[in-house]
Image 1 (cartoon, rainbow, N blue to C red):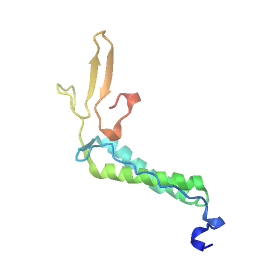
Image 2 (image 1 turned 60 degrees about the vertical axis):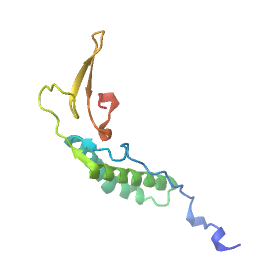
Image 3 (image 1 turned 45 degrees about the horizontal axis):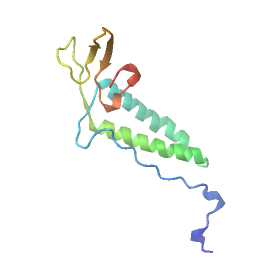
Image 4 (image 1 turned 180 degrees about the vertical axis):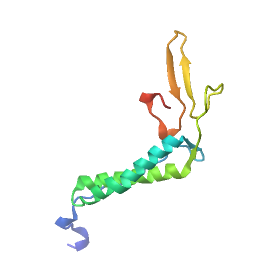
Length: 132
């Protein structure tokens, strides 16, 4: 049998290609983000590149570490893309009469119950905090 059709024991298992992580934005849509949101993405990117990635890369013999590294590389690319396309918007100061990006709004239901929401971009959505 040809060497091309055999696998060396040291080759390890095949790591399947992962589908690319795409942007949550429609093509051509603007990527609005607050300064705090952009900083959070920069911090995550820095941790991924400087701490997590080298740690996983050092475990090159571990198949699970290889899979985690592939997923991390996709996340790094996604963070870089988000930061490159980000348009930082300053939140409105004080009470605003117009609901716009980065504003915090209070919605009162007909039964009198109130809910507070913050209008943010796709990179800052946090349903538990009412950011969406």
